[in-house]
Image 1 (cartoon, one colour):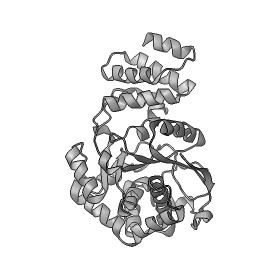
Image 2 (cartoon, rainbow, N blue to C red):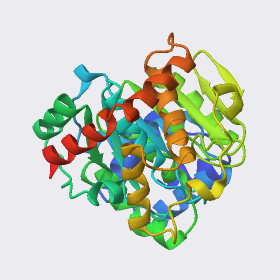
Image 3 (cartoon, rainbow, N blue to C red):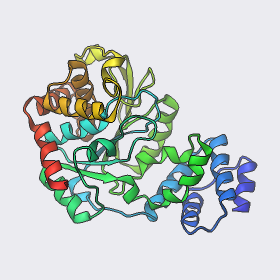
Length: 333
């Protein structure tokens, strides 16, 4: 580690193999915490490279618990978090809409760190018990179209740096890893980012990973399609800025998509359920429809986005999205 730190101080980059071995060494407690802290801060101050983040990803996956869901070719719908917008659980809600439309979803998530309600909060709020049992996860995705992978049960390496991250109290390179370490290595991903620098980084990473993907950013700072203004999408085949009007959707007031009146977890849960039941406000439903549509488009890029929007809307209107949630809860409680 001493030599690594000298190279980082000299502004040198590391290879993917080197950062993978560093993660493995961290899990073996091969380095004192002071050196790990210095390593994290050196990467943060200089800015992480694509090779370095791919190596960190490989190390986290190599030292964690994996799940084989390859035959289902699932999609994950996830945001980086940290946008400070405190929206209700739009990405998680979209997972059930996409599954209700007939696609397979392997959602990777955790408890909230900067918002009122994270994916694991809203899933656990329905009485679901988290599991790393592959047979149980396979049964869930096979019978209802959704498997939920609670991150702490799989990414064991992250617990070795959790104390340092808490003490630093600033974002680090490990904040970028969450969307990249889904233990089933999904075939597709919709990834919401809070700024265009992150979009460029993740685009390069996903190009190297070879998966089907769509990265989205609302230009007013949301790490998802918020419909509060124009938003940008980037995939293997297209890079485009959309407005809500282009999609036949109305612009949404930011207050309409925050976590709920009072912004408590209970409020966020009520909005989540109301969207899937089709009883939420039109803006709340439309935001989930938009994010779901681009997930469908990531899986089936030949399908026009207008048809993807229609499929997502029908998933809610027909009751299939809500039925998917109920079956998921039944299978996993």
